[in-house]
Image (cartoon, rainbow, N blue to C red; front, side):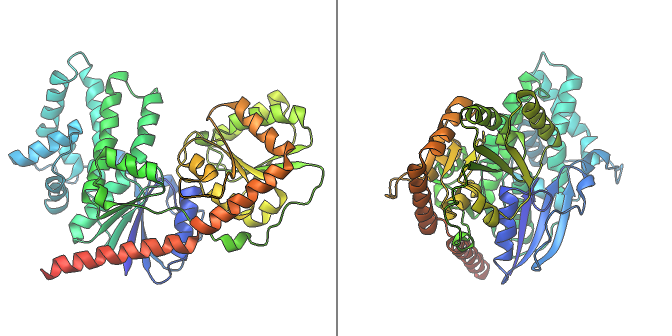
Amino acid sequence: MRICVILEGCYPYVHGGVSSWIHDYINAMPEYEFILWVIADSREKKGKFVYDLPSNVVEVREEFLADALYSKEISNKKIGFSLPEIDAIKKMMLCQNPEWDILFRIFQKRKVDFVSFLKSQVFLDIIEEICETLYPGASFSELFHSIRSMILPIIYMLTKTIPKADIYHSICTGYGGLLGALGSWFYKRPYILTEHGIYTREREEEIIRAKWVSPYLKDHWIRLYDMLAKLAYEKTDRVTSLFHRAKEAQISIGCEDIKCRVIENGVRCERFEHISVKPDNGNVDIGAIVRIARIKDIKTLLYAFHELNRKNPHTNLHIIGPVDDEEYKDECMALISDLKIRNVIFTGMVKIDNYMKKLDFIVLSSISEGQPLSIIESFAANRPCIATDVGCCKELLMGDKDDSFGIAGICVPPLNKSELAKAMEYLCVHKEDRLKMGEVGRQRALKYFRHADMLNHYNKIYKEVIKTWQELDSN
């Protein structure tokens, strides 16, 4: 069986949670062939993979969003559209959930050139109508370029040549979900969606904070990603999430409950079986297993550690992971220099199972997460964790209603350096509690977060959807 995995902005170009997850996932399923259909921002990334691809990856198809900006018109032949087609185009531009099958046919069956479409009278007429009815006080020039920039990557993706597969499996909604739905429609094959975070909510938070979006257009941009999520939820056969609150969010956006499954992340707990309690060397060693990126909020962690280290000088902070954002790394280094923060070690990429031996506990200061692998790995290594109350971090640390193990760490509010410093100090000082929490974490990982269990759940879904589609074909 051949599975087309569709990814946006992650594997195989960067390290990190989702990238690590999909790399291990493909390696662990040698019985399947995989096509990687990957979306990146610019062609500068072409072929620059940070992973050695597994042997069962039989094809890599790379799409670059920025290519749309430099594409030339293939034909200057005047194009016309039927009334249903115009209605679908208009709803897409208004982000009002169009008839996607009509749009798929326009760009896949009719082969309408997307540059020609953007130059068409229909496109211009719809923008004029939007300006007059929704934004009468706005600059037409600004609105034209804004709507064009919203629609450009969607139309560009709709024109792409689709790799043939038995199942399409996207790891987000957005443009990845669009390609998953398109592949399923074109080849009449099942489509599965897995969300590690709720993509729509993440984009909404970014847009609200964004300075590049005019205030009056922020709602329009938010509706764009909401529209793409609803497309993915409508066309998919199964939708998986990592925890129940994420499933509830998917349903609230528009996914049918019957399609939804919760499949927790899993780690190879056996990799960490050999790790015992760190020998007492007079220091407390704290690990942060993170990509160096703004969303991980390493600055708050540095402020908190500075506060801790002044009171408890025999503490070390190990920041473990790749640099995702060089500018942010420079800002962190400047902060360390300005505050004269001592005992901070940037390790870069390391083998986590080996490095975990040096650590007493783990800390995660992110402002957004799904179900972090770093927490589950720390549990498997018998290390407690401090984490911000984002995603399902609190449920991991405290357990849910069916979990009687106890507390495996401390949960703190995001962006709160004082609470984070207090939590770190508590685990530094109270060794007995720290060890007890570590043991709770290990029990929780062994029962609920095994890699083999996760794979079994996905294998079951693959077999279910293939069987359903085969039955439909036979009828």
